[in-house]
Amino acid sequence: MTPLLRFELAGAYRGRTAVLFAAGFAAASAGVAIAGLAPGGSLAVQGFARTSVSLLQLVLWVVPLAGLGIGALAGAECHDLEFVAALPLPRGRIVLARWAAWTAVLGAALGVGFGAAGLVIAALAGAADAGRYAALLGVAVLLAAATLAVGLWIGVAAKARLRAVAIATVVWFVLAVGVDLAAIATLAILPPQDAAGGLSLLLLADPVDSARALGLGLFRADALAGPTGAALRRVLGGWGAAALAAGLIAWTVLPVALAGRRLARADL
Amino acid sequence: MIVLERAGKRFGERTALAELSLRVAPGEVVALVGPNGAGKSTALRILAGVLRPSAGRAAIGGHDVVREAEAARRRLGYLPQKLGVPPGTVVRDLAVLVAGVRGLPRAAAERELAALGLGDRLGATLGELSGGQRQRVMLALATLGPVAALLLDEPAISLDTEGAEEMRAAIRAAKARGVAVLFASHYLHDVAALADRMAVMVDGRAVATGTLDELAAAAGVPRGEAAGEAPIERIYRVLVARGRAGLRLVRETAA
Image (cartoon, rainbow over all chains, first blue to last red; front, side, top):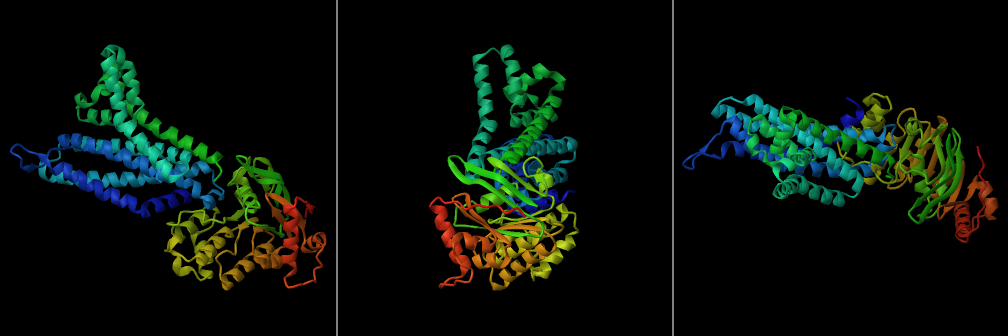
């Protein structure tokens, strides 16, 4: 491990953000697992498959918000690292180390949350579909990595913390809600066969929608993937999952590279 | 060797630094003095690679700070005026980073801090330290390892008498090791005690550079004349006043 990555990991780990996120996400995940309403209104534990679909909704709202917010703050903070920037390190590596550290910390926090819910489900409802549940954790980590990367890019470009968080919040709303609204509007205007290509691109252009389609696909719940997910199945067929995963990776690599390049040219 | 050649920096319409040329040889200590906003920090930040020059060039150890940034910073120690790391940073984490980047074992950094009486503060965050302790930590880390050029921006700020003496000792030790030292300071007594040469800056420009004797001659102030204030203070006051009036006496004495 490089000294810089170790430094960034220590900083990310020591902050209260990761602990609070892990505790909050664990409580919410266990709540989702336990509070599935059984017929008659009593509390019962759902199996891994049903719980995962519910948990995915939590992931799609909370993970991008945390990723974009934390990334934006971490990116803006890069402008305060005058001492570190004067060390013999490429500035792009500062961004890369920050992204890697926060991805590891958020990934661990997600692991705690998924683990808490998984233990409850396994103990009370059996271990069927546990493998797919673990894969869903992978999708959540991919989404965290991508939104952290976008947040870092926003933070580095915005410089000021408040501005960075404000922009990140708007971007979160667009990714979590706005793109779906745009897809629904597109479908309302165009016939489905004409809209399919555009909607597929729209899905790949939105990491949150990509994660939703990927997560639902794991449990063969594609019917819930929304208009963009349906369009992607029609256009890409079996390659859809690979395209979505590649899209999420691109959403990670590109913003980190752009943030690194921007920081390298910036006056601190 | 620290080199600035007609270096300039503009922030929009405002000129923060204009055509500053300066050389600091190995084993030489040069001070930048001048009122607030004179461009001292801007010059140091350009050399540290924190700001990109709008004009001219800057080099450390023969490496251009923009085109060969990493090589230029390889043997550079830099103490910024502001903290330069998040205040939540733990002292030990920062020490391990600096030691790791400079190829030293972490024990070397911890030993350095322990020698300053800060061994019991390794687990504290920088924000938890007093201003003086923080400055001593940052100075110790800036000078850690095989540093060949040292840039110090207001190194005595927040320091008590003991800390200021440590700082002066650190600069003298660096000079003795052949390190080229460029520092900015408002403390003229430190400048007189430490600097081989000084550059007086006003409004982003160097008004005069040279040894104290050369500047005394340029200012028309006899070195021995006290007149209620130390000679360096009178020299400084005269040169700054001339600088504000638009006069330039710049004579870069390349070492």
